[in-house]
Image 1 (tube, rainbow, N blue to C red):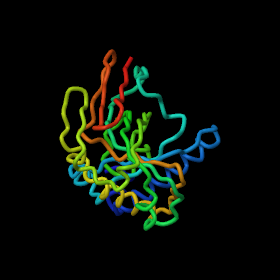
Image 2 (image 1 turned 120 degrees about the horizontal axis):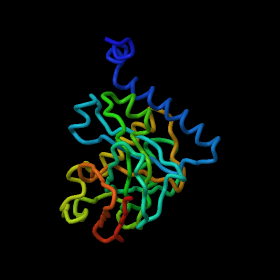
Image 3 (image 1 turned 90 degrees about the vertical axis):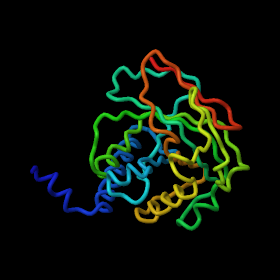
Image 4 (image 1 turned 135 degrees about the vertical axis):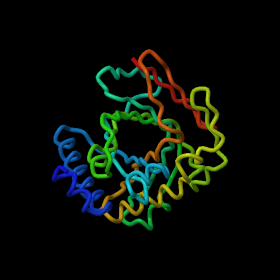
Length: 232
């Protein structure tokens, strides 16, 4: 057995995540040198199957950069990607600085739809590699916001993804309150900070969509504008 693989088997899941967070911090430092800033966060691998696979008890956390945001109804070239996927998600927005996990829920100001595009370039088998890759993040699209939903009671919300009706947007990904609790644990464990104006996209409301060139995709969260993207 290779030494690195053997070493990872001996390290606890939490320590693997911690190593991944340190790798993310190095990526953020490099991005800052290149003139790119973090503007948000992302959650991933929160489904029961993913937690079983990685031996985790909560969603994994990554970051979002300003230069990775693309406009709604754009055309994106994925010709150099390995295994591109599209994920319809829900974004939670914050209007206050958050200095402790206890403040997180009080700082929620709105929710809205989001799209994330990721490239599953490798099938990693542990949370260190997944977190170190920033959970495969490539681009994201943000939609409109609704401050009336800041209490995060979203079980009544439905959505349409392409031609598929989703009667409960929390049915696959889990409740937004539970996901935000996962996020709060990560913030506390690794001294991450939320700033006023930040947001977090909370994971795909359905299994990731494997996208193809020459096709268009759409996502409508009940009561919000439609998100669309064309793939070239």
